[in-house]
Length: 101
Image (cartoon, rainbow, N blue to C red; front, side):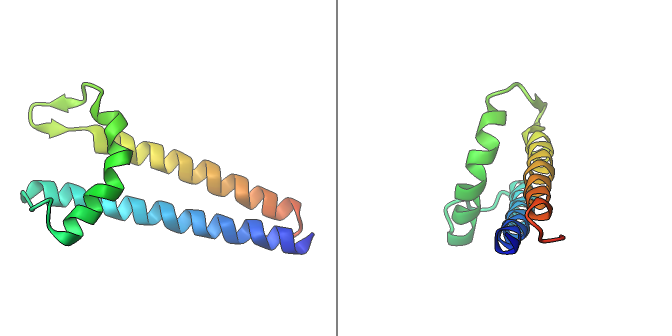
C-alpha cells in the first residue's frame, strides 16, 4: 500500500504545480492586457489558449466595472479553491495509504 500512497503524494505534487502554473499564466495574461500585446503572436497565443477556458465562464457574468474586468479575480478564487481541495484530498489519500506526506 506504500506504493499507492506514494502515487497519491506524487499526484498531489503534480496537481499543485499545475495550479501554480495556471496562476502564473493568468497573471501574465492580465499584464499583457494592460499593454495591448498582440494576442496572435506565438507565446501570447499559447497563453490565451490555455487561459481562455478558465476565464470564459466568468466572462459571461456581468463582472465589468467600466473598463475593469473582474473575471480574473473569480478565476483566481476558483483556482485557489480547487488547488486546496484537490491537493488536500490527494494528500489525505496519500496519508491513508501510508505515504506520510
